[in-house]
Length: 282
Ligand code: PMM
Image (tube, rainbow, N blue to C red; front, side, top):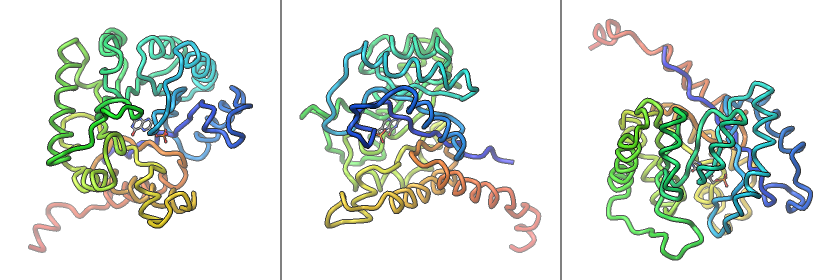
């Protein structure tokens, strides 16, 4: 029986992630939302204190620590499996000490040169995402001749570097980085080639949830008008495709819709015809 694709619920402890514009964002609300993510189907909570969306400005390291560590401590104490979404080794280190299990570094060790060493010495699983630079920089390059081939080659370089500093290959999780220095066309091409990413010999994480290319599909004239429910339905469909390709996990804002999508794929996989039967039919 194939292991079911896990649901990683997004918990952004950032001012812009709260409907009041963030002026009153606080730890209690973040913890309550984390528990709600678990209740609605998340297996892992991805806690982040710094937005990496296009146009976002970097937050101060101490502020990032203040945002994430107390939330991680409380959720881990409640039994949650936590990943910490950070590009800083110090934040990752203190998060692991507070009970986090997984490091999720969207820069794959390129932002903080000590991140991969921390992954090696802590033996924590680490997500290595495909990344070509901060999204507030004009230098973040978007040109690809063959996006699938180039993203795979660049991910392989990051994997090799991680292994070279002592990261156990079994602890490496790869992520194509949808939306990071990639336009909608690039993202769809990557999704059409998920099998190739799943074939990299590492666990695969796919993070499409509510990203702009989904909004553009739903509401091409004005992506900002795309309804949240439609975005979550589209995300769940991508979760099903990811599960079908053998992804280890999908990172989503609405666990319920993606969890049922992954369960359906798993149920179908569990009922695949036996080789004897398909052979008999041939
Ligand atoms: N995307 C965002 C944040 N963290 N982590 C991984 N591994 N992969 C991603 O694609 C990714 C990430 C930005 O999305 P958000 O603002 O919805 O959290």
